[in-house]
Image 1 (cartoon, rainbow, N blue to C red):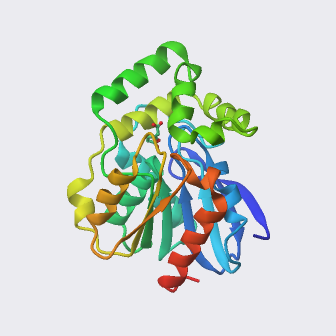
Image 2: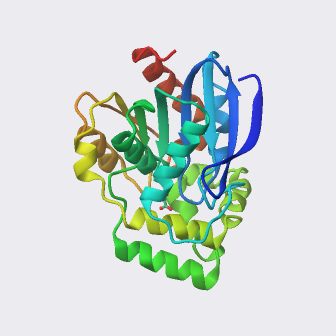
Length: 267
Ligand SMILES: O=C(O)CC1=CCC(=O)O1
């Protein structure tokens, strides 16, 4: 992976935390994480990608080390953040890898700015995730009880039973519980208000879908149906993994991503 530089990038009144690795002149690959996580979910995947790529991962607003403007947010604001970030970095023709909420941002960006994006990886995501009622209840519980009120239930959706029994869990619980209530609920409101079914059905670009066999948030069939909306897309299932296969199965995840990058001539 080589160098790995970090910096804050202003996207119009607030700043996003960016880490840039690989070859600065290489073909760009951008990574956007899930709700309640941060850019660390990609670390182990990046270590297994080929050299020669420009690897950009960032914390979404209200997450990780990025600023947290007052919520709630709309999906349009999260897509605008990504758009301004890529403009600030002079990125064109990127492969955008988005997981869950990050996959919704990926769809929104491809709908709006095809000059910035040449292909998508839609990982553990959908055009619509859960109902507004489910999100309203989750948001209310977290506002009342803090991040810990939902963390055990969330970790069950994120990880397979075997992985949850292993030694790494404290790190991921810590990542989730340290997100701010404002940032998490702000982005949760964006997910609650999003249904990209119609615009995503109109997308025409190379797409790889990735699902985890034990995903409790976006089950394999939902991801399969989502990517099937886009002609020519391919779907891959990672076994013995939950909602964050990039954390549970980084070598497999990197291999699928590398194969896709080679197929489309990005590497
Ligand atoms: O918390 C979950 O259930 C998983 C999730 C939904 C949207 C997202 O980004 O993560």
